[in-house]
Length: 386
Image 1 (tube, rainbow, N blue to C red):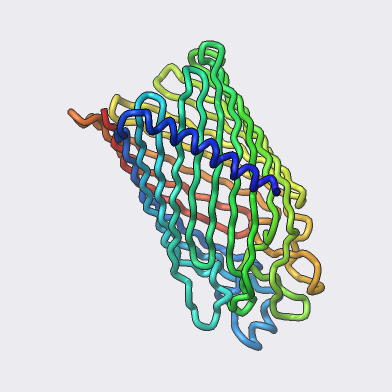
Image 2 (cartoon, helix red, strand yellow):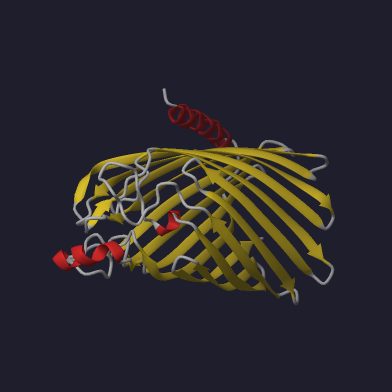
């Protein structure tokens, strides 16, 4: 039996144990409701896209040196509700919906323009069980529905605190199964495909002092199956395009270090570093700094700056030389550097006798060296019930 099947069976067993515990606990209580509305817009050009390029014979003459549009717009409303059941059980239900208008993901359909507007729905339920003052067990599961794509995920986690709750060690494992329809370079369907992703993480959190906290995490991910992006194309050296072909196996490693330092002027400085490496040849470094400042009991804000640099995969090309070897022209898998700058304003308002409300608004700009720019704006409301 494959390891992912064994893991799924074990997760269901743990879920059944939690279900038995649920039956002995009091009724549900709504703890908080979080809502978000995010708008995401990107613009740029990449060799993997046919959008905006000439069609027919004219396209064949010009395509090898042309880059298509990567324009994409997403509006995402989200709703998250957190419930408690007694003192040991907590549930988190997350419901995001994506409304996508794209020039590139569906741009293989260059003739009719069909399916350039689509909607994606996700349901994710996480349950945590606090067995005692030191041990917490978690189980989560969900599914994602999108045009030509169905995805299911299940996972579990365990955390133990010690040293008078000043340190926490945690481990988690997750499995994701995707089923989707392949695309041809002209937009037609080309049968069904699937992929499986298994992920495991271990982490350690330590309170170094009353003002300082550090966190370290290691994650390993194994992917198998159809790993090529359906709609991506690669310019062919004799003109026109051929489909992207990726290896059917990918092993990924990442190490994350975080730190948070309280500042005496009611501020906080947070740092983040991530090292990433995989067997496709990508080596990446990501660093981020966030400075938060509270101006009153009701108002605070934070600013963020993030830098990312990566090498490209070994089979990246902008001119495929044959029809059989692995290849990609995806700008996400190329060598590039990227900078993100953003900030968020937060207002906390007491809401007697129910609890408190939080309003926030944020904006970030992402730009990278291979002709891609993104803008992200978010507004949100949180209601916490007493």
